[in-house]
Length: 242
Image (cartoon, rainbow, N blue to C red; front, top):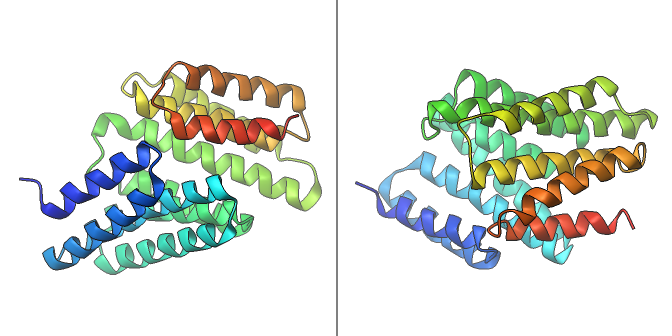
């Protein structure tokens, strides 16, 4: 039987996917209050992780860095709570979200370290909520994020991106695209996001290839009307190419 915390948490996730980011943040707070009463520390950490996503979406809409800083600290607290639980299977997603916040704040060295930790954990101690058949695709998605961040870090230090990181990113994305057990919404979100990440990192060094990945992302987004948040993110990225 689903707990009340899980029910409210589910409403928060649905609000986030509809693009109702402020409502999603509020519902995540409500879920955390119930999780606290239920003694569900892992649920509390997961709600914080979800709140991170909604706060980052608000940052995307407003450009106000304060929301991004708040998102980062939500991710940090989520990691700390998961660590305190002693359950390693609770750690991969919080570390992954922390890495995304650090990357958004251009803390690239820290982000690479967090992404590596997330990849290690998603392989060795995957969350129990993920279906066994989904795990290879989830691992591939994590690896796309790690490799593209490594490329960005190398570019920031010597203005020449690490070609091996590009190869790893494209290989992980190809693995994600071809995975037979992930279809529909999740695959569209992850694959379009992967193409956008590669497009962004190549924008200055290889604009032709970057635009190819940008178009591939748009083709996926256009095929699924549910990807409203991804479309908004794509439009913001596309403006940088003009």
